Length: 402
Image (cartoon, rainbow, N blue to C red; front, side, top):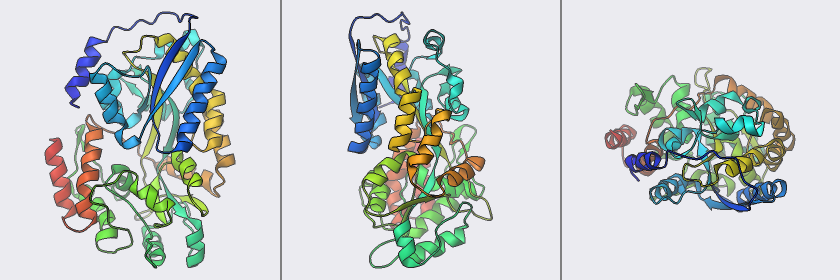
């Protein structure tokens, strides 16, 4: 869906009433990504919490796999069929922020304190000074690892700050009997930490810069783990969604990169003990990316005041504690973060996240980032499988987005 269609919709529905909510019953659609029944159960529970607090408001949750969520959002926007409440990831704000209203006018009437949430992700969900969504989670990308396989191989588990040499040694030791030490794909989240850690950057003059030497070096290093070192599996030709997570959860790969929000899916689908550590350090430097998502009111919503009431419950203290204890995400509400650490059941989780946050890159993005991520996932298959040079893959994607 072309960016111009989104702008056209935003212009056509820019005038939104912020009228005081009425007590008459309303039903609100709520759209959000979900990649498992465990996630869907969490969101449906929060929808029920809204109705419990505000009996006149019923929230109907609509789930879409993450890979397809933003394309669907664009399609619905063009058809003027957006849900009243929708999830917005900070990285996608440059592309989809115009579909959301500014929530700031609702704060005072609702007695809502945005300062209780982590400022980095609060700012990430702003555009032109407007608060487009209130965050429910955030977190740095970390390294998930199979503690059971590390123990069976008799090798030390990753510790915060561990080196790239230790990472490679572990990946080699864990690659045997048809199983691999690591898995990744072309999704930027999976390989940008390696680019950042060697001192690279992927944006120049507010535009994607995928062909500079450092990006090529970091991307080539990651793809070589599969194409040359064979410590990571080749990728399916279709660039299957969630492939790294599926390979990790099935026990076929012992390490992969993901965010704290995936802990609920991992723990619900594995038969081994899980650990998390920092991404490996190059020359003593480990820099990862971060992400975070919030919920906002779309511009086509006919009941914006009621929608914000619902959001205030969905990201409120009780809901944030529930999200933390379910393992769905590392909560953006600061006072709820202790619950996540308490129930994560992962030794060293606090040290890992604290260490990662000290040097984390805020994961700046540009317009059309969703399309860029899709192209990289699609074309990187050839680089991981050794049928095309990594530099040529990046050049091809850069040419398309130019």
